[in-house]
Length: 247
Image 1 (cartoon, one colour):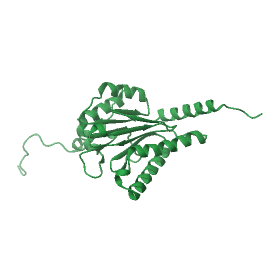
Image 2 (cartoon, one colour):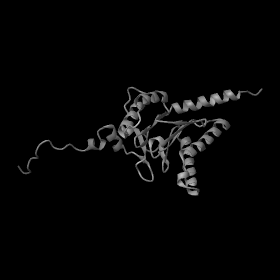
Image 3 (cartoon, one colour):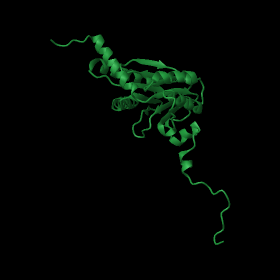
């Protein structure tokens, strides 16, 4: 006799499977600051990126299985390029992209045996903080319109609670980055995140044309107040006057 599983139980099992896979990954934080939107990922890799540009004013952040969210990212870039070319660059919006991702993730979740183990944020920076758009998408295609901050992956609830305690509107980039890093560290009281363990990028509304910018490690060190690794590797200057040669 064939084994029967109810549709409700199938959906529950898929959801539990996806949540466990996402929780095994490292966290990503997205939050607004006075000049735009900041993205911070607990990601020591310099080759496998969790944060990337999609279009002029739009960026993408993800947690979960890299090959799965990379496929989604590439699909989003193609969608943006085609629509911007056929119509107008202003017609490419985070809302439209979030709807495309929601349809894809929803179809995969309901029609395949294995759901995608991913969670995404699609963000678009506006002319002011009030017009910024941040959309969070889960493995089943659900979409949430977020404001202020988002935490995904790892112990997301602990990170989100720490962000809630630290976040305020109108933060500077330095304040926002330090709040994000402190919130990521809330998952493990013994762990200290340094610039080399972080992937950081911004959507800066004050830039022209392409508003996305990935921050170099040295810039992150400056914002966090860490001593520069390049400075520490330089030889120390002699403490006293040099002795004349030949004497």
